[in-house]
Image (cartoon, rainbow, N blue to C red; front, side, top):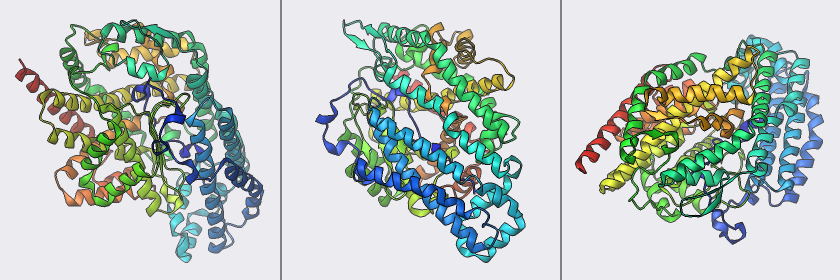
Length: 625
């Protein structure tokens, strides 16, 4: 059987440093209740080490199952149970090492533990690489017969049928072992980029208008790019991306290495393109990717309307790219400390049921979250549900802003989906597909916006909330599709043998970004220094991941409207979706939930809602005159 990659243990989502903060704290002075309790996974590093060593010693034993799968349904069940139980423990080991490393990226001990797990995962994958070819050798008829004869094999039906479906892309046992052995060698680009960008990069300093000198690391950039002072915004963009541009050769070499890895797997698994290779695993038609790019490009006029609205609210004659994160309404008190945010978040989730809210409170009370930014901590935010028998964990960089409250809501969506899927599904079916991963998170954000608008009467605050919703569409639908187009074109260049140097990536990124933001139409000036922004985006090291932010957002927009309207059947379908894990292919999971991603309806619905929000904002602005 094809075992899931260790990459799937990694965070469900990573929010870029816009949600991070420069106000880093001394970790030793933070109350423990705001730090995740990783001892829930293993009591200590020594306990982790003992389990890791025990796991490593067992790896050779799985060879004993080779050649036995076709002997009887009982033999197939025995092998599947043993190997998937081992993978469950592998995930748990990896999560502990990985999240400790993210707590302080400067700590060589935990980064070393993560590297040990990468090695161990590769060894385990190689030792079990014979499973998929052996299942294929049984043939569909025999597999179906085994499933009928042994009811306990039912939990593996999805996995077994999926192997048969991908027969054309499966090699011999020897070929599959080579592919598995290559995992460690091909996985280094992302790790190297992570360490370079988060720990070793010489981030520059800038002197702000008030005389303050700040070091523009990723966290500080996330704060100061949203400054109310326009000169400061321009300065931090020029200094931050200018410094990144000095290292475009290094960043280009790292990203090229990642793309070449993707090409290796594409060729080894007999796909025509890297997009086909990435889409076939979850069984998503490549037409869904193409339709998203086409659909968003057809709706750029609505995006440009938003950009013009932003320019109006900021009072600038010509919008620049460095204006995209500035506060739309500067006079509003934008303070949401965690206890205030908690009240809003839990109240907003009431439509999903008291039991749902109870689990959210459990996450907040029982240290599932590492809340505040500290020195060396990984930037951004994520949720990790890889420790199947424990509970999900969340990493945040919370700074008491509305965006931070929204980000916490977002990550709780992931956490709740992991919680319910792990609780309901057997391990083999618990990991939900990446394609649906952002549905629950953006669904939660929609609930929060709805709740806040129903309870806030102040005109400026309503403008902030409505503007935040539009920011979500900008960042999740249009920006992520912009990234997706860059990623597709970049891979197409590599597939044609064209070089992916820092200069080539600069040009490609700038051309696409200027198209999306209407640079040539005078909508938003995309200054030359923005050509280096691609090097700032970690998602490009997860092949064809970013487009799923956009598709998930459009799906959740359609689903949340029905739930908020009080449709009990829609609410039940959505709750069933949260618990479904990976028991079906993603397109089918979403159809069951009530949305068809093979049509343009979800995107059309989202753009219509976007325009309705802009209508309301323009009405509020006109009333202020």
